[in-house]
Length: 159
Image (cartoon, rainbow, N blue to C red; front, side, top):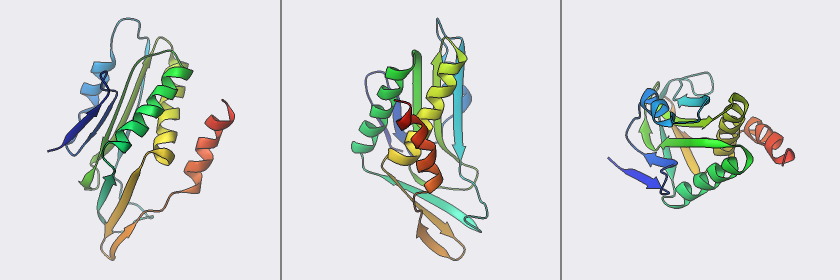
């Protein structure tokens, strides 16, 4: 089981092992927190990947953690955040398994909501992960989606 942690505050964790979203939410609680916003992504079996057996996520160790930490640092620079946690799994994942957890904590809800959206939109487009889907008809690499790039634009334009 591999767990790679980046930064003294452990904002970013890349790991093979599953995570407990409820436990991670509890870790974000501290003095001054009035809002915690979270996103949990799971492997889905849907029309885009009929007969999905598994999804394999690969990354470039060291570079991936640093890129995600850069995203977290940008969020911390834009909103008054008390705590941030990003956990991203790598390796072979089955349908309904956890992929990613993003949690942000702030004194106020809008900062928590906006920063969680921001981090997730950047993760989908800028974090160096490669996804391969294994289906009943074979395996294929997943291409980037235009809709993810469009979602990112609102943050780029609002700088």
